[in-house]
Length: 252
Image 1 (cartoon, one colour):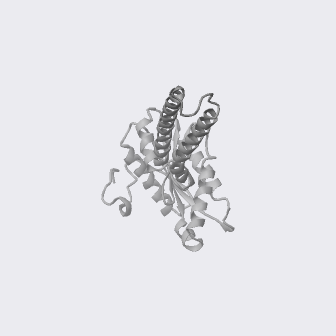
Image 2: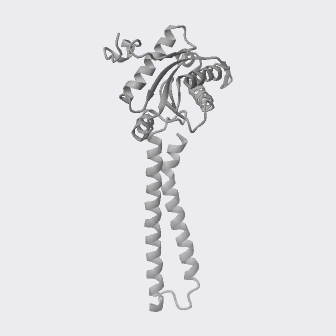
């Protein structure tokens, strides 16, 4: 929210500062003129100064607009609460990722997050989400890991160049980190997390379906008692009907 407010005032602030600077420069030079101010000999000075001010202001406005556009574009791919990439960021990742090596999609859902929101308030829930995002960024190296918040209490972590053993190790690390007690807004909060794992390559299926299958594995982890992880099994795992209706790509 602060960043969005800054984006709105940034171009105006720059323009005001530029005009103020130009006016200070103008009047400083004005009082140094050897001839009377309205002398014909001073007309080139007024014209040149006026043109410099106009061109400078135009350049600054154009630059400010480009900066604003770049920041707004960045905001479109970022979650407003955690600062992580959002669902649009995930779509952008699939468009640009070209590696054919094996990867793992980890779909995370915080257990009983709704109860925490209802009991302590949404401000505590938002603060908790920020703490969770900080801990998730401590899992694996940044070069090998992409992290997204899809909304609510759902996160997706993509591990590049990853085999099943590495994926399970990362899931275990996530469980250890996220289940450590939190001190949030003066409250002592405990949570658990359910994780679904889908091993794949970036080109072996529709990307949306890969995420849905990781989600399906997460639902299995929840049904098995929560606070654990489950690996999607081709031909054995089904998409949850309560979320995806009758769409089901996996074989029964």
